[in-house]
Image (cartoon, rainbow, N blue to C red; front, side):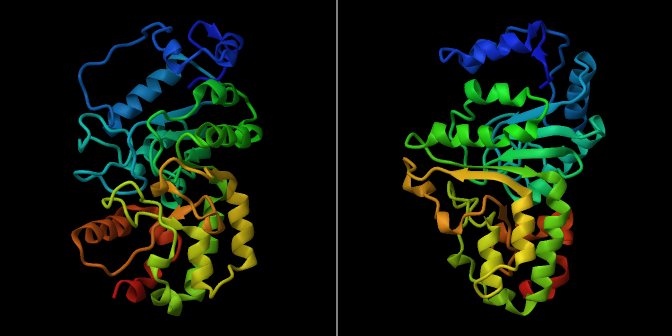
Length: 330
């Protein structure tokens, strides 16, 4: 998304359209001019993404950019049949998806100055593993740790905020509008994360894990709030970070950790009365930040997840899991 307008429409015109309650996102489709056509290709392939985003930035120069990704999503997980990381191109279970490390590399390459924000209109992207990969590609990230309902973001209300130069000042309203939209008419969680704080959060988590590594085996993930609620394929992909740290520390998280988490999660919210009990959130154990907890399970799912986590996800090395594998991996 280019700040300031869409093709020949000014920011003021777009704001007016979005202020009209009768405007839907479909009213914006087709209003622009075709600048370039592409041959049949896999849109989620790394070089294709890099070319298309680069073409957009060349065609519409701007002092800053934000970007929205809308598709199916499955957080940090590897791409396998029945799961997807982000940006599915093809059928429901197509393997033509983008892995998060690849996506982060594309964004860093096309815009070394960083995107002002990355908004994921896609399921289960709100986890530490994703945010950490994006720390050198975006200043802020807006995502849900749960599934996102099919209607997606309420663009009629949030789009004007996304055009503001000081996006930090509008992260709260964006998230609040999302939760208000789905309160009593759906379900959801949403968080706005300062990606510049992710290195500090990784260091804080690492410090806690290393200081309490003898207690890792005592944390039963069955007692934690987990966010892969929509399907057994995703169960266990992420647990609540703060609750895990509290359990690991015997009931109370260290002040240094909680302060860093507050700096990182700028705003978070959840629906208090979801239409599906499947997506009910325990507010007492909700921090807005999910994280994977590796284990010694030998089922095919966890073998795949753990191997990919260790080989491809930077958070694994930054947050203390690599140094404690001899404990949790046995």
